[in-house]
Image 1 (tube, rainbow, N blue to C red):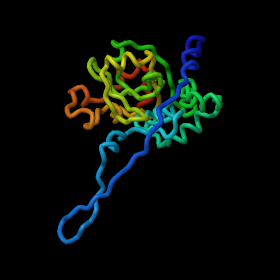
Image 2 (cartoon, rainbow, N blue to C red; image 1 turned 60 degrees about the vertical axis):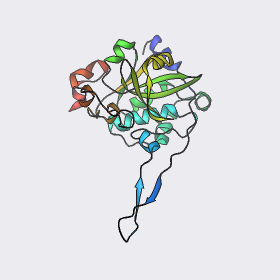
Image 3 (tube, rainbow, N blue to C red; image 1 turned 90 degrees about the vertical axis):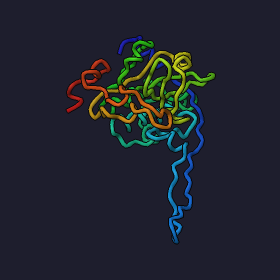
Image 4 (tube, rainbow, N blue to C red; image 1 turned 45 degrees about the vertical axis):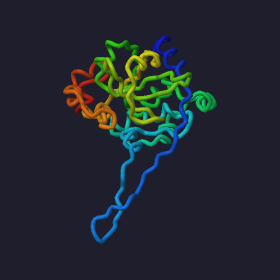
Length: 230
């Protein structure tokens, strides 16, 4: 790793939003004489579909990375698993004060047998982005890791560990984003990852392009190799 890359990763450690807790509801389902109950999925639960919710005020990085690993690579990690893994070799006092860094993520991903690379990307490159990736947003002074699902000229779709799946105007995203994304590559990547599908709670109408997963050849520039798909 060259000095510039090392500085890029080491400089990015952040505080995160503190999450609220999820809730579900059981309601009566009247189908005749019997009165069974059925589970109703709340809007909040739908918002957190395929997103690991952060449980602490410093773990947005762990939750974002866990979201990417679970739903793009088929891992079965909890937020606690990722926190424990990233704590290995990390400055624990700094983590509790400032959050995890991209360098912490990179080291953990490598221990899992995957690869992670940081990219500087402008709007043109983002429009061509074919994979979910981790980005840093500065929201009203809070530096916060999220997973970017899709980027369009008008809207950007993100998986937010604190707020779930949400859509923000791309102009607003560009102002909050630091211009760096963390891409993870390696064996087990799901070409049909749900992180690239826009949930109905966010968009009632998907474009034709959103219906088709990225092709293998389109992923080579992000650090993938042909052997990752066999």
